[in-house]
Image (cartoon, rainbow, N blue to C red):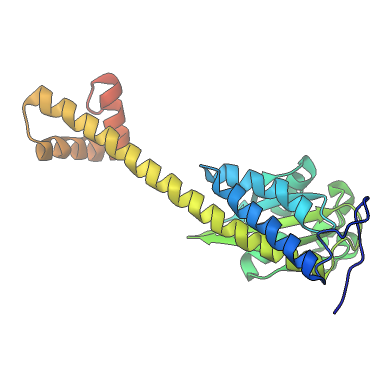
Length: 248
């Protein structure tokens, strides 16, 4: 059995001492707390922000974190970042259209970089390593939603900051984070659908009262206005509820 003898200032084994049952129990407890914490948030953006703030404390060697999302290489952006340096990393990847996070996104694998400045896989990005201020990183694929891909990326200012343990813990963290993010997105969709239904129902009620027509006839009026103005039905309904006017 291997053992990382790293300890905290009080002499206790750190969370990275996963070669012992105590270390494994501590890790399991922290992941359990993470899962509960992520479930508290109502929006996907809150989940993303908490992920990047927490992963820095969970992954050995991590100093910054970002979540990169993209539909194609030229549109990569940072959906959440723990610092301006982490956000700038996504900007540079987007500008050069290359980098480890993009590979993690599109090749669906974990990418570990020991020293970006000497890395030959992404020469354009490596040439700007000093501009970035980060030398080592690990990138994990986080989610796939339709055509949108995402990766969770941890960065460090020095070379060789991440080892096998960093990669293993990062994968566990990313798995928990992906589940929480999917739950938050589903909740947002449900809330949006309920809100849309309420708005459309309110608009139908206005038309039914105004023209003394049935619910089906009121909905047909809304649908016709939507087609004629090339706007979504819920937008037409919201305008009617706000202004009393049907279409414009």
